[in-house]
Length: 112
Image (cartoon, rainbow, N blue to C red; front, side, top):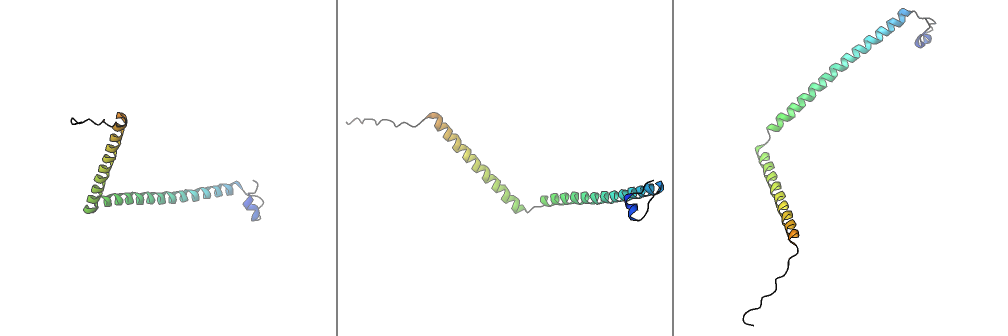
C-alpha cells in the first residue's frame, strides 16, 4: 500500500493495510468519545436552562403585593385614558357626520 502523507514525514515509504485500519479505528473512537462528551455538556446546559426558567417563573408568582397593586392601578388608568380617547374620537366623528354648526337667526323680540 502506498504511504500516507503523514507517514512520509516520518520517513516511511510504505504502510501496510493494518496501519490504515488501526489509524481509522483510533480516529473513530476519538471522535465518538468527543461526541459523547459534547452530548453530556449539552444535556447539562439544557437542564440548567430549564431550572433557570422554572426559577424565574416561581419568582414572578411571589411578587410584592404593593407592586401588584400599583401595576393594577396603572392598568386601570391606562384603560380609562384609552376610553376617553375613544369617546373623543366618537364625538368628533359624530360632529363631522352632522356637518358644520349653523348659527340660529336672532329672533325678533315682541317689543320691536
